[in-house]
Image 1 (cartoon, helix red, strand yellow):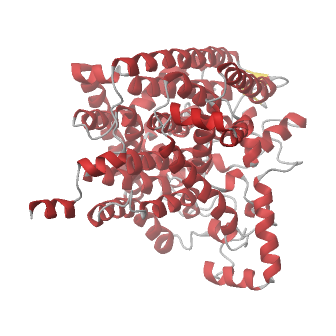
Image 2: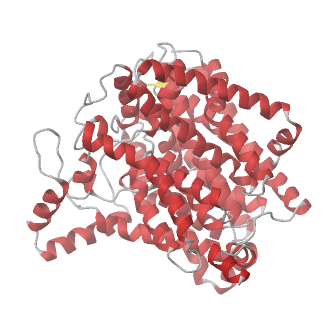
Image 3: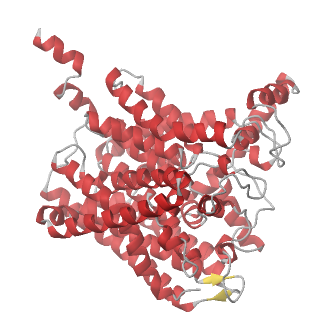
Length: 584
């Protein structure tokens, strides 16, 4: 296992490779006043996702061409870094708190989570990634993207892994691994390089959460309170280090959300939102539960785009989704194991033996139930949302602490933790009035509506109960919904007295640090070159969050908010049909 001191340098290289071209684009969009500054890093994530997705198809076509593509993108990233450092206007924008703070947090958090993971192993030496203490006790889903990338490199992409077809899981994270194959494909850096890159992909949700909190017009203190509490939850910690690409999909969905509902109504923004939504679907299709209510809300007159803009969104989304759907149906069919499992209630471990379609299985399995059995199943699904005591899985270690970690990862109320206390705010008139004074309530309601619709349709669509995979646990649904719930409830919590809010933050940080880190590290094999870096980066994250709050408040005092409410833009910038009537 490589020395932990390699981690900071490796992370810097991989982050620049993934994000630098997108940062150039994001800063250019800021200069043209098309996006707010807090969207620069999320937009860079979308560009990195598009480059990664392209790698899948180029490597599938020809591995040699894919290798050339990897080196070309590395050269492009190096040129982008050189430009960012050489141009004074780029350096100035990079120092802006809404660009610099998400970037620095992205780096520090990824470094902390990677070193915390590699600092503790079940054996004296780590040979396979899931021999790390944090990654024990669940499944191997976190390494499926690596296996699919390996099979593409071996020119055998249809090779199954365990009971899964390669086409059963969306390929975006595999594309990022292929993009950086000169690093992730080496024997020395196979585990560390893969984990560093994929943790970085999951932590991209943090700049997206930052952007939506800025859209709510929270001051620096309140924004950092919500962000700190979110970062120190079991939900964020575990799903960042156990790198099934669900937080990556959430990040891209939240970026699309910000562009669609709080961005400027320009053609380029609709196109970018379509790419973000499409990239989210080819990262993890669970976010469909959040994209659906977003689409429903866009039908509302207040937010409804013109038909030409709808065409741009659809074209960009289809450009991302259609190739993968065609691959599933034509190259490695049927590619719908997860749908058959979750929606039709049919687990198929031997995926080649049952030739029934999703529709046939859906009708057959629902046809075997009475109306009241179906009602019972759906009510049970809703009950599961509130959590229940479990005996498995033990996450990141055995015993009561392993069960507590499993409950936080599985059930919505356990996962939200202290955030659920925000539900008292609407019931208290004084707090409700204060809410309107400290943030944009209209925007908060939009986020709450999307999360609420998601929370309702998710248990209705899943077959359940029965096999654990058909129950509405957190990891079966949309992580974008969870992120929106954290944002909405966290923003509401900030209207409580500051002393109470500070106690909540301290309790969240202490609980998660003990349960998910100290409690995992003890009684195992520790690697101090990683653990020392983990402790230092933990302290750096907390220190930088405090500093970012001060800088953000100073920034807001010096400059007015740069985004304009959607309703004002609708008046200021007429849609095409309004321009025609104006000319008449």
